[in-house]
Length: 100
Length: 479
Figure 1 (cartoon, each protein chain N blue to C red):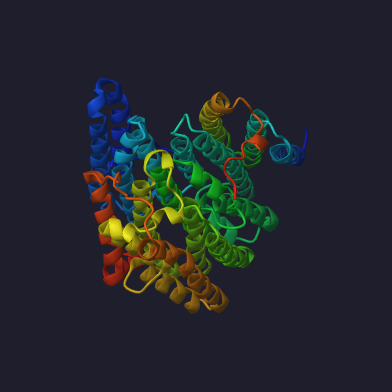
Figure 2: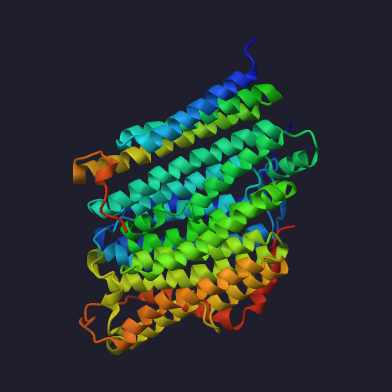
C-alpha cells in the first residue's frame, strides 16, 4: 500500500503549483484555474487525513469545498465576462485603472 | 450518533435575513419600476426583524447542532454590530442606486446574504462552518463590488477582490485541512483539547495556524496583506466600499479572536509575536500612506487599514480586556466609518465624479449642516476626545499597556497623531478654502438623513457615555 505521506507530498506540490501559477500567469482564466488546483490539493489532503483518522467527516468537507468552488467559479466567470465586454482583454496587466 | 436537535431560536437572525433576502429576490420581477425602492425598505425591515430576533437567540445560549453552532454574549454583540452595519448600508444605498440608475433590488438580497454569512462566521464553533460563512459573505461581496456593471473601474475592483479573495480562501482551507490532520477534528474546542496533549506534531499545527492567520489577515486587510484594499475600495460603488470597510473586517476579526483564543491559546508563543509585528506594521503603513492620498475613497481605504491595525493591537494583548476593547472599537469604527462613507456618497454626485479631498472646498459655507456632520466623523476617526474614536482607542491602548505591550501602545499613539493630519485636512478644505462648487445639486433624501442621524448619534453616544456599551463588551469578551 502506498504510504499516506506520499499523498500529502503530492497535495503540497499541487498546492504550490497553484500558488506559483497564480503569481506567474497573466491570463485571468489561468488564474482561476490556479485557484481551482489549490482547492483540489486541499481536497486531496482532506481525503488522506480522513482515511488516516478513520473519520468520515473529512470526506464530507470535500463536498462543501466542491460546492463553494462551483459557486465561486460561477461568480468569477461572470465577473470575467463583464470585464471582457468592457475591455476586450483577459490580461491582468492591462487592468491598471486603479493604482497608487 | 443521533440527529442534531433542531433549535430554531438559536439561528433565528440568520434565518430571518436569508428568508427576507430570498423574498426580495423573488418579488423583484413583480414590482413596478417606480416601486423598486420599496424593496429596499423591506430589506431594511428585515434587518430590524433580525435585530429583534437576537432576543430569543440570546435566551438560547450554548452549543447547538452537534456543536457546530455556538450562541454566547460574544456572538450576540457581534451580530448586533453586523445587523447595524447592514441596516445603515441599506439606507445609504437606496438613494445611491436610484441616482446611478442601478435600481436592481438584487443588491439588497446580496447585502442580506452577505450579512447572514457574517452572522454564521461569528456563531460558528467549527472551522468548516467558518469557511462556509466566509464564502457566503465573500461571494456576495464580490458581486456587490462589481455592481456597476458597465463601469471599468467597478469591474476591475470586483475582479481584484475576487482573485485575491479566492486565493486567500484556498490558504484558509489548506490550514483547516492540516489542523484536521494534526488533531483529527475541526471543532475549535476539540482542537484546543488535542493541542493540550503532548502527542501532537507541533510543526504541522504551527503551519496550519500560520496559513489560517495569513488568510484572515487578507480578509481584514492588515499589512503586509493589504495591497488589494485601496484598489478595491476605490473602484467599488461608494456604499459598497463603506460596507466592505467595516463588515468583512469586523467578521474577520470575530473569527480571528474566536479561532486563536479558543483553539490555539496553548501555542500562543508561536503566533503572539507575529500579531505584534502585523499590528505595528499596519498602523505605520496605513497612516503614513494615507497622508499623501488625494482621493478621499483611497484615503479612507488606507485609514481603514490603519484602524485594522488598532484592532490588531487589541488582539496582540490576548486578554479579556483586549477582546472587550476590540469589540467596542469595532462598533465605534463601524458607526463613524459608515457615516463618513455616507457623506462621501452624497458629495460624490453621479458616477463618483467628485471624490478628491479638494472637491470638499467650501462645503462649510455652502452646506454648513453637512460639513458639521462630516467634521464629526473625521474628528472621531482621528480620535478626538468626546467622540467614539477616542473612547475606542483609549480602551485599546489601556488593554495593550496592561499586557505590557508598551511599544505597540507608543506606536499607536504616534501614528494617531500622524492620522490627525489627513483627517483634519478634509476639515481645513471644508472651512478654510474658497468654494469652487455651489453644491446646489447635492440632494439629501430621507433614507440618507436617517443613516447619517443613526451614525452621528451613535458616534456621539459612544464617545460621551461609553460605560454602558463597555459593560456589555466586557461580558461579551470570551473565556
